[in-house]
Image (tube, rainbow, N blue to C red; front, side):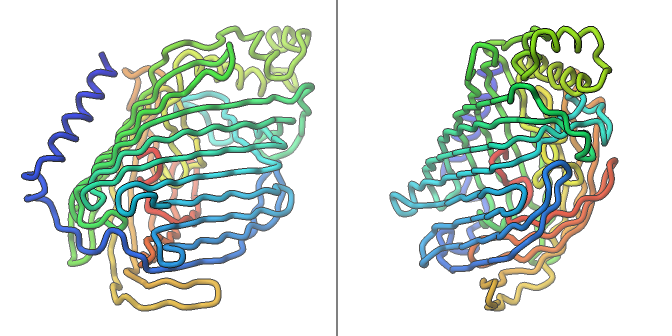
Amino acid sequence: MKYMLFRLLTFSVLYFFCTSSVFAFGPDRRQDQFGIIPGYLVVPAPYVYPGLGKGWMLIGYGGNILETNVDAYLVAISGDAEGYFGSVEEIFVIPKYLYLSGIHLNIKKYGLNMYGSRGMESEKDDFNIFVGDKYILNKLETTLSLMERRIEFSLYSQNQTGRTIEIRDSKGENPQTIPNAIVFKGQRNGAVLHLDWTDDLKDPREGFRLKTTSDFVAAVDTGSPEYNIFSYGLTFYQPILGNSTWAFHYFRSDAFVKTKGNLNLKSILISSGLTETQADTCILYPTITGCAAQISKAQNTIKANKNGSAHPLGGQDRLRSYPNGRYQAAHTQFYGTELRWNFNTSKDIVDLIFFSDIMEALQATFFWEQGSVAEENSELGKINRSSYGTGVRLIGGSGNVYRFEASTGNEGPEILLIFQYPWSGETG
């Protein structure tokens, strides 16, 4: 029944959107939606991550390469976490109608924060860092674009694999080697419908947009679950102060399990690298050294295998004062508001050795947001976490958004440097 309601809502909105009468009331596009103004950025940046190490990253971006619509990102990582991340977007197979995008990530050392419990009740330092020596992710997406990019429909396929070799505490200390490395795999496919009733796809100042996603998470072995994730994000843009806007965003994501995974604590501990004797010991004495982190992870796995996992909160898109993936459960709810004040729209040309673009706007932003996750739908919203902050952005003619923000919340401040608007990622 819930699947049918979700699909009915999506197709009803799509039908409404496709009627000519809708566009008669909507804002006109204020600029070409297939602009080819080129831009680039090359900048080095240091990194330090507890339990992982330190080193340097070289960040590169090219927008509208060779005066086409192709955008590309590359992050090359040296030091303790050697590897690279690359993406290519908007390779048009049929000009203005059909394009391809892809992502490839290959890291030789990584660290993931594994919190003591899913949901909203874990404390700031209630996590262990699971360190691995391999992580590979690939994603390919095909998008059909119609009506000056007001309607876009995408299909994607994504797979990932990794290997965890040791566990450290929240400070990155006291390493505990896992007897048998934990190898994990993931596979998901999905569809995305993006309806954009604004004055500009990449820099909206008026109107609204709706993005719905339907993800199918496949079972990669007999112990993992199979489930669907249905999500939607709705954003409204109210123009104020001439060229500025006040944005309001709501996001909802829900997992629906088709086939449950393994719910046996002992077998999950064994599959996580422990021997049968070690698993029995940890079940009997869960607080002894080396067992607490394994038991917490196994209990989280049981919840994920039983309920599935909706899109999380935390990171660059939603609840920005919290680490990426900070809060996760079967259901997610989020809402936020953001004042975007364009205090300079002079369209100056910036041409430096490491950076080149046309400055469409210099923007100051002030934002507040709040979200909640829960295993049961009825519990959603009973415990909330908030973020608020400010930042400065440069809106480039190449379509990129150079974004620097400082935010804070219940667990302290975070600094963010990224290259896209919030609420615009793959999850809505």
